[in-house]
Image 1: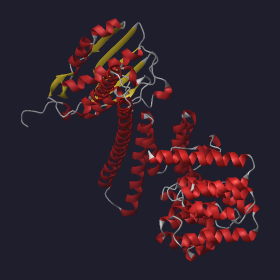
Image 2: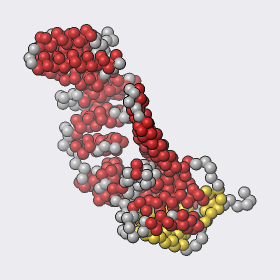
Image 3: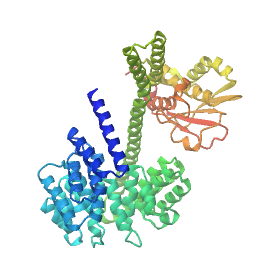
Image 4: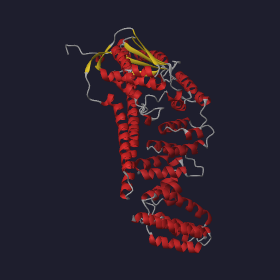
Length: 592
């Protein structure tokens, strides 16, 4: 209560000072400001107001003194530093030179005496360069960084420097307005900044170099695009570069590699395809490039291109080992076997690495979404309880309001329960492992949901070419089809039809699940398997939590299976499920 009362009184004082200032009565406003400082000596705000009042009076002695006191009290509110920076620049442009020097010397003395927090000192160096550097060795390094002649010494310093010292060198070069013959030094600092995840600072340095070059250095272009990819923000790169077909054609493989991610992020499938085509030329004679391109083909579902490139990789391997045999006269058959093992192991590693990254990204999104979704009902409950407590404390609470509170708590906890139920199929430790018929699972799901399907005006059909069995948790596996059918029911408005067909193709179970609904828009196709992604209102109670397809994806992963959206299907939506017919997906033999 005392804190709230103090804030109220402080606001009253500020309003009075503002009125006096507006009326032009600066002398009285200054007196009131001094009174406020006496009342709240540790508050930096009134020192700032006092500095502005003195500056308005053109009192170039008192104004910087007030702002210095403001600066000393910024340790708890560094976000207010921008106000000081504006004042310092304005003071330097209007006040006499000797007073500006005196003000800077006072700030440096306050830094040396420990009166200014280290974080604020760092902001001073980052904003005003070497003007507030008190370390003589660092100041020497800053001066030497203006020339490539001292690059070796700069590198030695950076290797042992603290994080703040490194940032000081980088910011010094960012704010260096004069042209310097130090392109190599700046390129080195860009690499250092990127390694330390100072992406914004590194990009600013790239911008300063590119602005001076008629034809940008390919290494800088690649660095700029790579940092943009890491930040998932290409805005700065788009300001500096013209990213079009001409850049694709004149770039080397390293830049084309980054352009693939750029065009994928912008949804430019045409230029993405042209970039991959240009990369194919680079892969003609390079095994590492061919392997990288092969991984891209897998990522973008270009399986035919991947198959052809795989055969080409093998030819390159063969050619390389023939040449090696010619030089070293080793046994060809032994080398061939070894090369094949290396290639296929690398392919497996690439696929495994890709899958691991995908799982980690999914887990990250899942936890983020889970926290967000749980937070909403919990916040609603907390707000209602706090409001009711306040009303009861003031003696104005009623039984109807308490009943409304109970209803809210029940509704919100039911919402949490529904969301937890969505997770249960993939996290439950209670399961019965047995051999079960996939065909029977599908039929049972349709039987269970037949009444609801009929009410929605949806018919269904099931085509089977043979009986197929799996080993695992039948109830859990059935959840795949419950979720898919419910998903279709939410999308189809009338005269709907759901079709499921099961077959075996090359030791793989293939299940086609189709409906004649509106289909899935192109912008949502890459998001449908992400947790908590939904086009429906999550509060509707109609399955809008965005977990259905995510659960399907995870259950199928337990069977080494996959699910993909068929982009070529035109009359609604079609999912293709593939499950390998492997020993672990079938009941163990009795000998085990």
